[in-house]
Image 1 (cartoon, rainbow, N blue to C red):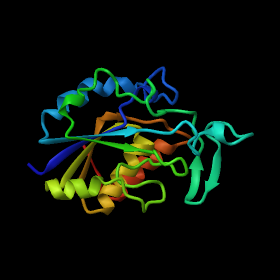
Image 2 (image 1 turned 180 degrees about the vertical axis):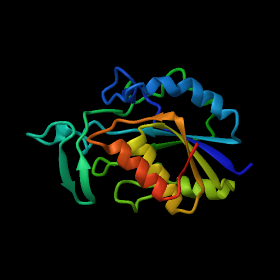
Image 3 (image 1 turned 45 degrees about the vertical axis):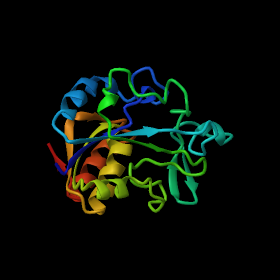
Length: 198
């Protein structure tokens, strides 16, 4: 009873037709719902940005989506406006079984800093509260699914491994964006950190 399924950002804006669509992002929803039955705890994350979030290209005159800028916490990809609080794009995919969620972690709410990981904002220091929740629940083994493999899934997996959790990634139940080879790079980083691929 110590394992948890961590479902990353299964929201409309990351699915086909969304503002930051991941190819075939919606195709993994039925498999995720099925996987939920195998875990005593299910945790969902939800990107939840204010409309003026600093990671949006629209907030940087002369910049375009996917340009890079330097923030106080390091390099930052500029994204299309996405997952704006209360919008349809920020909602979970309607077919996702959210009734199984023990906890929903919202991230990216601070307009000054992006937040890929389920555990920390992009300064790698400001916690979301997930680690404390897992500790108090006695949840020690994590399995990750969701979107996108090379960003929010990767950062969540790396942080989980760094915090000492055994981490498994279900390869059939993730999809990636793949910006300039980011998918292969992410896979390598996760393997190096001890993430198990299943």
